[in-house]
Length: 72
Image: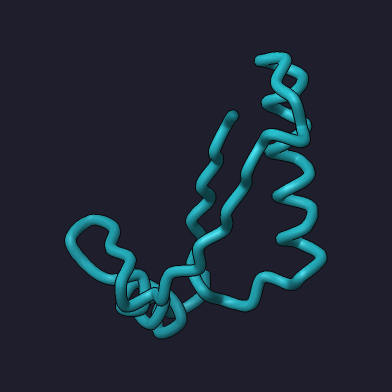
């Protein structure tokens, strides 16, 4: 009974996009591992960008800095 946990930042993923992630992840474990899709659980967790860090800083700070950077 596979359990798949997908974590994404809370930045407006649509219901349709989440449904596609669930279907795609389920299809992958069925194809690769031969698992029963009816016994495959997929959970999508949306994490606030203040609670997700990369390289020692929050994604919120990274995105703010990227928006402030002059374009080339």
